[in-house]
Image (cartoon, rainbow, N blue to C red; front, side):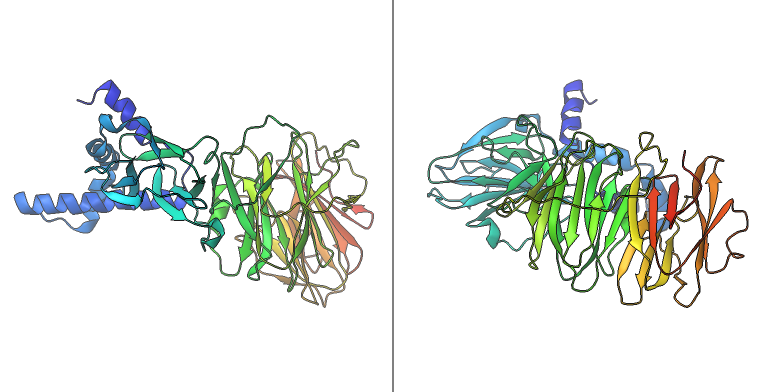
Length: 492
């Protein structure tokens, strides 16, 4: 019978630091299934003469996965290895490894050779300019690397893996070691290693918090995305009661990341050929945390909610970018992003004002839910790709394609929900129809080049032409469209 102390120990050893990726959850289930099928089929064939088809084995093991995962963890867990110890860089460092649920973890770290720590990773010599790089996932430390320079490592980010950095320096350093009885959980040395990064931490980092709080704790994890990569064709921002995620799009990418937050709001900024981000701006506030960018082609994109307060904090320039590919770091948090970071010198202080589009006068009640705003001129519009999100009503947004190759977006645009494009370039005008969801919330019901094809079951139809400005104010359940003095159904 498993005792109470053992149960608590196993819970700590299998406790997640944070939510693993969908891929990791799928990999783990498949690993448990494969192990069970292999062991059960081997045993029953050898001792019972029982042969079952693979489909039956899969049905059986699906009922046993939880039991097997507990038994596997129990077989590896040792109470004697639950400890918080320390090692010194003044002596040789030895380590051991263990395989747990299909992944190899570091199981021990010591200044002395033992059966549990048989591998030498550093000799007793000085390290005036070397670093210990610690790689971890949601369960513990998976790898230790020595490097003379963090920038010398050509490492791209891997979802679910995080890096911590401990600088050896020229003197003796004490490293604190935390084990959960199966594997190592954490290595720290003072404040070093307190923040995990999705790539090795750059040697030069400056943080920009969204709040003016000198006592704010350092972020637990800093994720990043590549900016101005030649392969990038757009950027998305996830908003769930605040900024949560930034994403850089590339051709042929896996779209499964949208499923991480299917009911949140996605803001999309396409980029044209040879278009790069040249400025990053930030607006500090407790709740209204906005980030905005400007491109070399005059595009302005505000990643944040539409607000009507007159006393909003101004945007402040926090980064200037060149054509070289760089990374923008942001706090990884399910709550909201509280900090941005950049691996560069701060931009020169100038008396600059960030000017961005504002909507026409309207009666949208922004205090009831988060609304977003975008607007674009329609000269040269050739095609429109409507966005129909599964399990949502009507058209959530539109991707606008212009005759010169330029692209814009209005409303919520998710690239996994593109409908067939509608050619409007040769049409005299085009139409948007509107209705009310649940009798309350207005939304776009249809898009077409003739009134007759959109007006069925609609409460209102707007006619639009190839000039003027289209304004789109939207939330997760309703929208207001304004065009040259015309307005769609009012929001509530």
